[in-house]
Length: 258
Image 1: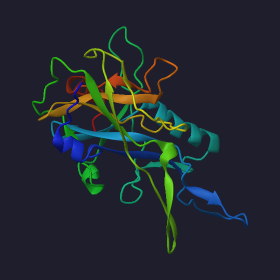
Image 2: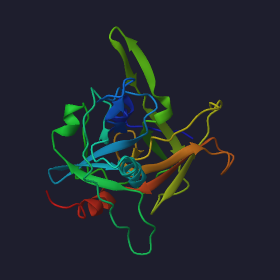
Image 3: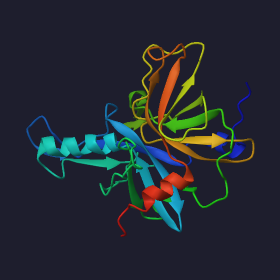
Image 4: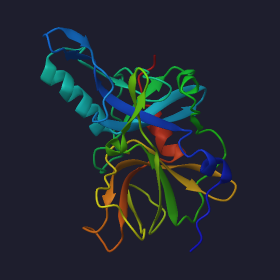
């Protein structure tokens, strides 16, 4: 089967998302003093997806990412102990103003968190929010999705003259769909040589796109991914929350006005 990705998306898959890292703000030095915490390659993270509608910009991630951040605050007993930041062109703070949108009647709770952002924030880190008001309607027939995110176990250190910095690659997963989703959905993919230590934790909150040769748009938000051997004979699986333009606009309607 031939899979086609729009050239604009293929050239820069992460243009609409960034890492969202739960960061310890302070650390104890060897002599017992407090100092600013240094970057670490073992930080937990999710992915933050940028969208816009009606002139406003929003960030979407998974609710379990926000729950992890809040649990670190609770354990420390200090509201300033941790923060959420991106890891693009430096650390930019993302304040916890996220809300959990309500599901449609009879559906399970959404693993989704959303908040309004300053319109210039994505541009400051070299990103562009995907425009939900464009007329890129979901095709009637799709057989695959294209998921993007930042696995937390793939961080690595780059040595520099003054020390080191932490970098993180993006991962793209092109996987099959059994049908056009109407709610939570699963995608499966096969690769010949799957790494033994592969772990896609950290992609949570990343976008899943539908794509044709000329257009693409939002299909879902990743909430889990990993090896698929336990579920089927496929190599990789991705679980997604349905997040078409129409669905996301329903979530936006539940975000408090600034």
